[in-house]
Each structure stands twice: as C-alpha cells, then as structure tokens.
Amino acid sequence: MSGLIALDWGTSSLRAMRMGEDGVILETRRQPWGIRQLPAGGFAVALDAVTQGWPSLARIASGMIGSRSGWREVAYLDLPAGADQLAAALDTRDGLTIVPGLRNARGPDVMRGEETQVIGLMALHKAAADATVLLPGTHSKWVSLRQGSVVDFCTLMTGELFALLREHSILGVGVDASVTAGDGDAFLDGVRQARDSGAAGAFSRLFATRARMLDGALKPASIPDYLSGLLIGEEFRSMQADQRMRSDQPLWLIGDAALCNRYRLAAAEFSIELAPAVDDTAAAGLWWLARAANLLDVTTPISASGASS
Image 1 (cartoon, rainbow, N blue to C red):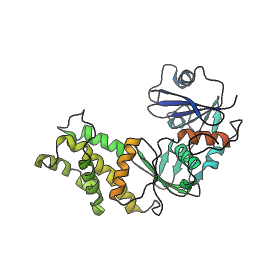
Image 2: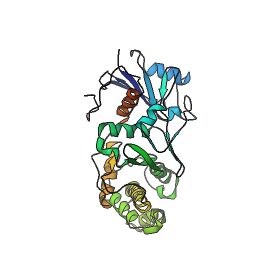
Image 3: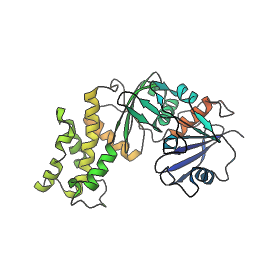
Image 4: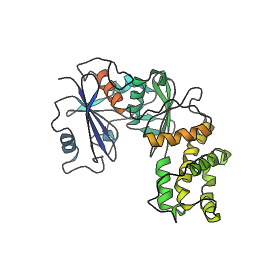
C-alpha cells in the first residue's frame, strides 16, 4: 500500500495525517501530546496511539520532535538550504523519519518545523521560491528565499512577549483576563505608533499604554488589541529598518487565518503588498520531502490544492 503518515509534532501538540498515494489527506488526528506533555510510556506510546488502526506506511515527522528535548536530536542544517538538502539530511531510525531544523549563523538563529512549512509553500506555489515568507506565531519567523533555498531568517518573539506583557506586567493590571480581541481601532492605533516610533522603536512607547489608560484615552478592555498592534507593528518596522528581507515582491503569509488577518492589516499600514495567506503547508512539505527521499512508492507532483496531480 502506498501513502504516508505525516506528523506535525511540536512543543504542545501532535497532529497526525494519513495521506493517500496521491498526497491527499485522508484522515487527521490531533492530541495534546507535545514533547512536554506526553502520555505514560513516552514518545513511542504516543505515536502508536495516534496512528492506531492505520496501515503500515512510512512515517515522517517535523517540529520539536527532532530537538534536544524531543524523541531524538537531529542536527540542524546550516544555511543556505533548500528542499533537496533537507531531503538528503532526513534522519530515519526506528521506523520514524525526522526532518532536521535549520540554523542561521547570522544571529545565530534556529527553526524546527517552519522549514517544512516553507518547503510545502514552494511545492504548492512556485512563485514563492524567490520571496520573503512570514510565519506569525508565538515566535514569528521571517524567512528569505532565493531560487528555492532558505538564505536567511529571523525570529521575533512577538506572541510570547504579548502574553508576558498582558499577564505579568503592569500593562495588564486592570484588564479582565477573559477579554478577547475585538477593538480594531485600538489595534491599528498600536500598529501606527510602532510604525512612527523611528529609530527608538516600539519599546520606547510601551509604557505609554499604561499612561493612555490612566488618561482615559484607552479603555482597559482595549489594551490587549493595542498591545498586539504595537508589537506586530514593531515586527514590520524592525524588518523594514534592517533591510534583510526582500521587499520587491509580495510577502507570503503562512499560519492561522485570524492571526494572519491581523498581520495583513498591519502590513497595509506599512504599504507592504501581501500574497494570499496560506493556512497550512506542513502536509505538503512532509509529502515532498518523503517523496524526494524515496519513502513513497509514487512519484506524483503536488498541485496547488494540496493534492497530487
């Protein structure tokens, strides 16, 4: 039987995808079994449980599963690196193939999991092979691609900083923890404050969040949106100032639709053109790498729909 079991195995969750011989996802299973909260018995038990009842197929995983705290550590691949280099460096042992992460000597900086999403993006959209890709999240990644190779990337801890400031700083005092995003004007105000902060950057305006609330210019319930805008705006400001990432072509977004929409709104304030957002490319990336490494019995190309053609 041809096909693949593709695993997106991160810090807090495990997603298993059974793919048919044409690359179409036939079934997806999710468990809260990231590398930090495994069931009794550890990694092997988690893998057996999440794939129970599925046929015996090649298994390939990307993400923190290959980190020092994962199932087994797989060495980072230094830049520049593309799909062919990643496929050649796959680590196959004990019935599981693990994708190596990437290391950028400039920084230094590292990634695990995002490289597979980038490979998937290029498999689905050839135009992304020479572009900048943004993967928003807890640790946002800005990735520079040249002729299908990752030549540079930068990590910004935007999501984690937002959580720390909201939950553990004076800026979150008086804000109801149950408040969710909803004030679009406050978000855009924060973006513009970051955009116009000049060389000092948005951190020079963080405490003004508190002052604005005390002055009555910012409602306590609007603080999360304002902070979100300020921090996301700082991502764009700092990346433009650094001039490391390509700006002569549309920026590609990969990630959660709601979060990508926030980045889309912020990009407009910086006059940055965006390509259509792509929700999830991990499966396409895992399929491409497995096929390149001869883990499959089929050689069908991937179409823009995520299936093979």
